[in-house]
Picture (tube, rainbow, N blue to C red):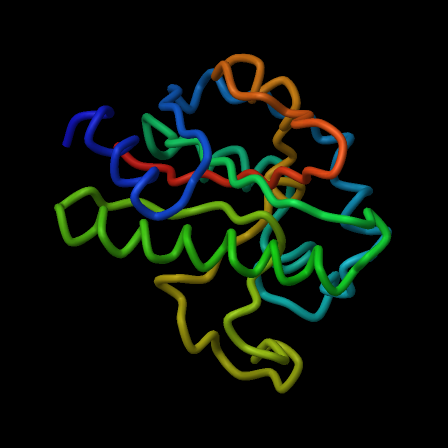
Length: 179
């Protein structure tokens, strides 16, 4: 599948921007991992896709580098109040739902890979980890950019995608990682 077709499919799923980059070019910085440990999202230690259960920064780096390319994805949302956690959570959920739809389409077209979300996996609430049961959807489980220690601002610069979209707008980012 060509990168042009992938970018077209991303637009069809509602992404505001998309770009392809080699995984070796993805800027990683392990100093981002403590952001997960602050547990602002409430998923640290209670979600398979989040630290410490998702893997160490080095393991996450190796997972990214196990594939050759990443389709970097951006959605943009209007938001009246940056402190409106409910609106932010809904926007992240919509971003991740679009990423799952795109992943399904790409896989149907023979482009196998995995995706990285705008937050930790929320396919099950609560995550099966809480009850010590295996993940119910391992093929769609996703970790967030912070869990992978992706330096998102630098990544967007490399891809030519705006990081700050302006007043009243909020952008979320993710990736589909493939060969």
